[in-house]
Image (tube, rainbow, N blue to C red; front, top):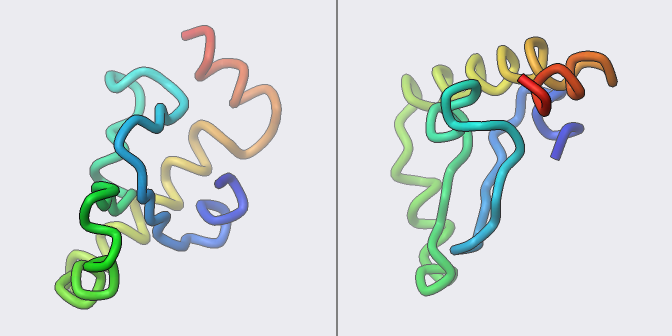
Length: 83
């Protein structure tokens, strides 16, 4: 997951109960991650094609910002976990 964010790529999470790191007050994963409910797995390509260029750029930037702030090094990861 960290590698995806460090590349500025947009993570696609196909899971209903997956818990992402950090409290929601610290990281709003909805700005970055594309969530696809498990029941819609077969619609993943359709969902991704429905994301416009502007939103894609916004999500890329959000991913990179989250990585730089919270995941670029062990100290930042620990800070995010205990904050």
